[in-house]
Length: 165
Image (cartoon, rainbow, N blue to C red; front, side, top):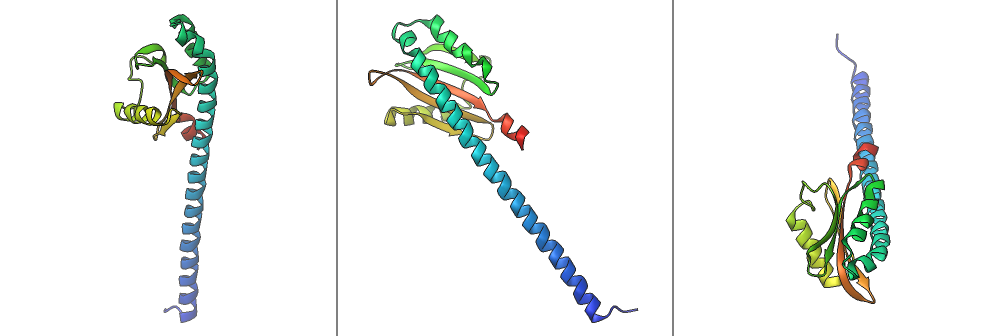
């Protein structure tokens, strides 16, 4: 028994509507994921920047007087932030002053990322950041009387982004 041309056309239209609806739903879902990811990364960068600013304001005396204990206490206060992987104070000559976090792993994602951030900070004398799939790294100069006295580098995990999605 053959199908009538009308049923065949109706069947084809239903299939086409289902395919178009599926494609539009996938497109909408992809747009939602992209917007959420961008929004979260901007928010995380803003949060880490404010956190770095507060720590840097409190660290000027410790760095000026080479007080490693106070510098370490400031970085240890990052324990309350679960996404912070590591943080490091550097002297003006890039020697380590104090550090926090998993010291078994390298401080930054790669030396390439750290060197790129370092180059950007040296050019602009302002915050520099880089976001990868898994981490956010922020490098900031520490100023005292408009003179750079050291640097702060904070590395944060983006795991909570993927848990949220």
